[in-house]
Image (cartoon, rainbow over the protein chains, first blue to last red):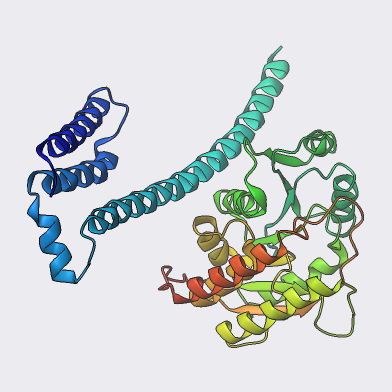
Length: 126
Length: 239
């Protein structure tokens, strides 16, 4: 059984992470849409820290002999989910980046063309 | 009836070849507009093209062959060209063969024409790993698109307006050619292969490195199969 001390420590650590995430959002360093995953993950950990027996209940239900392994499983699960989410975000940004680079390059070409035309007209006016 | 035709020439560090490529195009197809897409080269590729008084679009960041070609397709779409030709900047394609790939489009027989090294009499020399790769693409893509496509990696292609309209929006990146074949087929474009001659590379090096070739194979095969599983997302405009 968990001692009270380690339980309090676990809750404190989770709260710290949540406050850190919220402060990042407040400073506009983290967008809300990307914070959800982190918040859900840390809330899940808090639930396990507060409700001590949950781990044992789940372990018995799914037939895991060593209950803390469940905790590790949950953490890895959220970690993988967050990684997946991040790669989706990167893929989208790569695409947007590409589209923007193409648009800028095409516009630059157009501007060059227009500048040359304008120059020609100014020379003709003189 | 004359068609407005543009040749999209992707080029990355091709200062040794690009001038010859442009002269070849000018000599055989003087009416065709040339647009070189300079994929952020470190050398003087862009300056050479500008000195020759041809249009060059200098990409602000290096996008790779897919992104470069797509930029040209966007240019063709925005400027209302009837036919768009894809023509490599490394000198392996021959301007005298352009007639063959645009004719089926002018005649309305196809939406996309691929110039193939392996169709017909001409034999094209290539090393063994590359041959294996090309053979696998041929097998897989021919199964997927239900007709024989012998040269899936060929970058010598011609498109009509509808195909350009589609590809300007969705063009595969990285190693785009085989995947594009499947995408086009899935979106009900009529593909046609015609035999053409190609030259051996004159200078520079192929975009496909030896060590990356396994990654290349896996990536392209996966992309082709996934492209096949996608729902068509483009209603073809009948011209």
